[in-house]
Length: 254
Image (cartoon, rainbow, N blue to C red; front, side, top):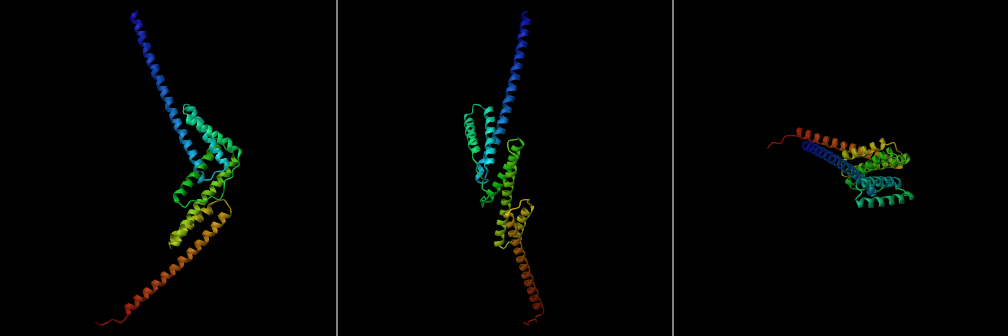
């Protein structure tokens, strides 16, 4: 009887140990999944906030700003559910929801004529920001969080802004190379600017003016190259004549 009781207790202890171990492993898996999800949400939050704070470089319309704020609020709410003890997240969520309510009542209009920076690194940062914003707009539209018309309007505006950055950077480099008599490089820069302009389906005064400007610059460079080639040919001709004259000149006697 005693032996049977001991065996029963041993079996019970083994079962309890196995159960505790399984429960512990399950908790660890849940915690690992929560940490992974929290990290994913934090990265998405940082990306959204970066685009919103970068509005000085990539101007945002009220619709896009509202979309970003709603996305930030959604991400913060999900993070609070995973980590309810973090007060800073709750505070940021309250602030964001207040900003969403305020912006929903306003009708801010974004300026179309954006001043482009002279620094190449800043231009690259602008292009990266535009690409991220366009991708985010499409993603939020796919989730049903953004109206189709807003996506169409903003995608067109951002596409034109990206085109302008590309064109202006090439024309700027072309002018610099031209002023330094680097005609071959200048021609390549203007040809690239013209290729960007011809490839776009958009039509407006800016595109028309830049096409005309690029073509005129290319014509001017072509004429300078022709004149330079003519001068080179003339110089070579003079040199050849001089060499012939020296060859057939009377030999001096020493």
